[in-house]
Image 1: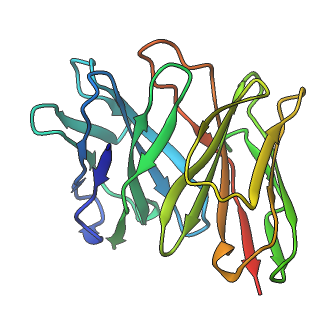
Image 2: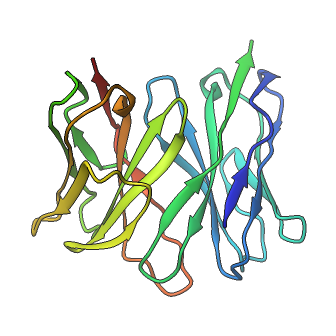
Length: 116
Length: 116
């Protein structure tokens, strides 16, 4: 069965520093997608970044980048120049299924606290 | 704002009751997904609809049911409610998945259900 593992329950980072949130996954599929979502204390789930299993380049979206290491089955999120507004819960997720089935399985999340 | 709307934002009810959660997907999205987020189970996929038809089912209880209407909005019905059903219920929508493509799911703000 497919599985997402986030081993860091919580992390601190100083404002303006970079931080890496770890995510490892387990799947026997050749084609899959990996996602990161942010959940602030207000509760909404905000899409941050996507990496396809066949993408040769690591995905980047502004201050977010995804360090994709396929052989190690890891998809770590890197946030550069942390801001106070980055304090939130971060979830790694993987698409399960193929074709028109597109359900996501989520890790347990990492709570990031950015300190001034 | 993801473009996905959910109503109501909060719902307080008693055990044994029935409630209906409503979701409107982003304009043009045909797929709707329901997720449950609880402290003990984390984020779990419940069910997916595509253009009115059920496409995938997760760990959805028999007391729960959903449907997607011709105008593409979706409703999640929860009946015979128990204390353990208290959770944040998310609806998400995405474009039509393509072969090998994992379409991004955009989440609504969620409905926070409290069963007393």
